[in-house]
Length: 135
Image 1 (cartoon, one colour):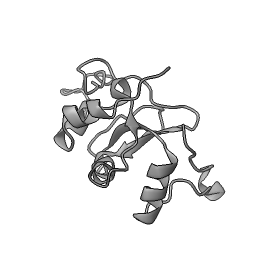
Image 2 (cartoon, rainbow, N blue to C red; image 1 turned 60 degrees about the vertical axis):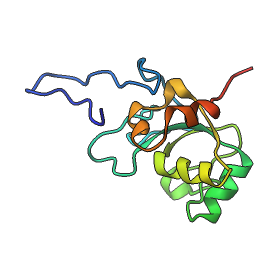
Image 3 (tube, rainbow, N blue to C red; image 1 turned 180 degrees about the horizontal axis):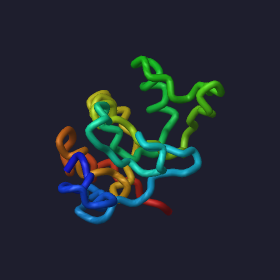
Protein backbone atom coordinates (compact mmCIF):
# COMPACT_ATOMS: atom_id res chain seq x y z
CA UNK A 1 0.00 0.00 0.00
CA UNK A 2 2.91 2.37 0.62
CA UNK A 3 4.70 2.05 -2.71
CA UNK A 4 2.87 1.76 -6.01
CA UNK A 5 6.04 1.01 -7.97
CA UNK A 6 5.25 -1.99 -10.17
CA UNK A 7 7.06 -5.26 -9.59
CA UNK A 8 9.02 -7.23 -12.18
CA UNK A 9 10.18 -4.17 -14.12
CA UNK A 10 6.79 -3.17 -15.53
CA UNK A 11 6.72 0.51 -16.53
CA UNK A 12 4.80 3.23 -14.67
CA UNK A 13 3.13 3.24 -11.30
CA UNK A 14 -0.11 1.68 -10.22
CA UNK A 15 -2.70 4.29 -9.26
CA UNK A 16 -2.50 5.39 -5.64
CA UNK A 17 -5.59 4.66 -3.55
CA UNK A 18 -7.33 7.08 -1.18
CA UNK A 19 -8.76 6.26 2.27
CA UNK A 20 -12.19 5.64 0.72
CA UNK A 21 -10.81 3.01 -1.66
CA UNK A 22 -10.93 5.13 -4.82
CA UNK A 23 -8.18 6.60 -6.97
CA UNK A 24 -6.20 9.26 -5.09
CA UNK A 25 -7.26 12.74 -6.23
CA UNK A 26 -4.91 15.76 -6.34
CA UNK A 27 -4.56 17.76 -3.13
CA UNK A 28 -3.10 21.08 -4.34
CA UNK A 29 -1.05 22.60 -7.12
CA UNK A 30 -1.24 26.11 -5.65
CA UNK A 31 0.72 25.79 -3.48
CA UNK A 32 2.30 22.66 -4.97
CA UNK A 33 2.28 20.01 -2.30
CA UNK A 34 3.15 16.37 -1.77
CA UNK A 35 6.35 14.57 -0.88
CA UNK A 36 7.10 14.28 -4.60
CA UNK A 37 5.82 17.82 -5.29
CA UNK A 38 3.31 16.38 -7.74
CA UNK A 39 0.24 17.98 -6.16
CA UNK A 40 -0.85 14.64 -4.66
CA UNK A 41 -0.32 13.00 -1.28
CA UNK A 42 1.52 10.07 -2.88
CA UNK A 43 4.01 8.13 -0.83
CA UNK A 44 6.76 5.59 -1.29
CA UNK A 45 9.72 4.00 0.47
CA UNK A 46 11.66 7.27 0.63
CA UNK A 47 8.78 9.17 2.29
CA UNK A 48 9.67 8.28 5.87
CA UNK A 49 7.41 11.08 7.18
CA UNK A 50 4.34 9.61 5.44
CA UNK A 51 3.09 12.91 3.90
CA UNK A 52 -0.29 11.42 3.07
CA UNK A 53 -3.04 13.54 4.68
CA UNK A 54 -4.55 16.19 2.40
CA UNK A 55 -5.40 18.81 5.01
CA UNK A 56 -7.11 22.17 4.67
CA UNK A 57 -5.06 24.60 6.74
CA UNK A 58 -6.64 26.58 9.56
CA UNK A 59 -5.12 29.38 11.64
CA UNK A 60 -5.48 27.15 14.69
CA UNK A 61 -3.58 24.26 13.10
CA UNK A 62 -0.84 26.52 11.71
CA UNK A 63 -0.29 27.97 15.20
CA UNK A 64 -0.25 24.45 16.69
CA UNK A 65 2.25 23.25 14.10
CA UNK A 66 4.52 26.26 14.64
CA UNK A 67 4.43 25.76 18.42
CA UNK A 68 5.28 22.06 17.83
CA UNK A 69 8.41 22.96 15.87
CA UNK A 70 7.10 22.74 12.30
CA UNK A 71 6.50 26.31 11.08
CA UNK A 72 4.42 26.00 7.92
CA UNK A 73 3.27 29.63 7.80
CA UNK A 74 6.55 31.52 7.53
CA UNK A 75 7.77 32.05 3.94
CA UNK A 76 11.11 30.49 3.04
CA UNK A 77 11.87 31.96 -0.39
CA UNK A 78 15.26 30.23 -0.53
CA UNK A 79 13.29 26.98 -0.88
CA UNK A 80 10.54 28.41 -3.09
CA UNK A 81 8.08 28.19 -0.19
CA UNK A 82 5.68 31.11 0.23
CA UNK A 83 4.28 29.89 3.56
CA UNK A 84 0.82 28.47 4.10
CA UNK A 85 -2.30 30.34 5.14
CA UNK A 86 -5.75 29.29 6.27
CA UNK A 87 -7.63 27.65 3.40
CA UNK A 88 -4.52 26.26 1.67
CA UNK A 89 -4.39 22.50 1.12
CA UNK A 90 -1.21 20.68 2.08
CA UNK A 91 -0.04 17.07 2.34
CA UNK A 92 0.67 16.64 6.05
CA UNK A 93 2.54 13.86 7.76
CA UNK A 94 -0.01 11.41 9.12
CA UNK A 95 1.66 11.48 12.56
CA UNK A 96 1.49 15.32 12.70
CA UNK A 97 -2.23 15.21 11.86
CA UNK A 98 -2.70 12.63 14.64
CA UNK A 99 -0.80 14.88 17.09
CA UNK A 100 -3.08 17.76 16.14
CA UNK A 101 -6.12 15.53 16.55
CA UNK A 102 -5.01 14.57 20.05
CA UNK A 103 -4.52 18.29 20.84
CA UNK A 104 -7.97 19.26 19.44
CA UNK A 105 -6.29 21.26 16.66
CA UNK A 106 -6.72 18.92 13.68
CA UNK A 107 -7.40 20.59 10.35
CA UNK A 108 -10.09 19.32 8.00
CA UNK A 109 -9.19 16.47 5.65
CA UNK A 110 -9.98 15.99 1.95
CA UNK A 111 -10.71 12.27 2.09
CA UNK A 112 -10.57 11.72 -1.67
CA UNK A 113 -7.05 13.21 -1.74
CA UNK A 114 -5.74 11.44 1.41
CA UNK A 115 -3.63 8.36 0.69
CA UNK A 116 -4.79 5.01 2.08
CA UNK A 117 -1.41 4.55 3.82
CA UNK A 118 -2.70 7.10 6.34
CA UNK A 119 -4.88 4.35 7.80
CA UNK A 120 -1.75 2.79 9.33
CA UNK A 121 -1.61 5.83 11.65
CA UNK A 122 -5.14 7.26 11.91
CA UNK A 123 -8.53 5.56 11.81
CA UNK A 124 -10.95 6.19 8.97
CA UNK A 125 -13.54 7.17 11.58
CA UNK A 126 -11.31 9.99 12.91
CA UNK A 127 -10.63 11.19 9.37
CA UNK A 128 -14.34 11.13 8.51
CA UNK A 129 -15.13 13.18 11.62
CA UNK A 130 -12.83 15.89 10.20
CA UNK A 131 -13.86 15.56 6.55
CA UNK A 132 -13.76 18.73 4.46
CA UNK A 133 -17.13 19.42 2.88
CA UNK A 134 -16.99 22.10 0.18
CA UNK A 135 -19.90 24.51 0.17
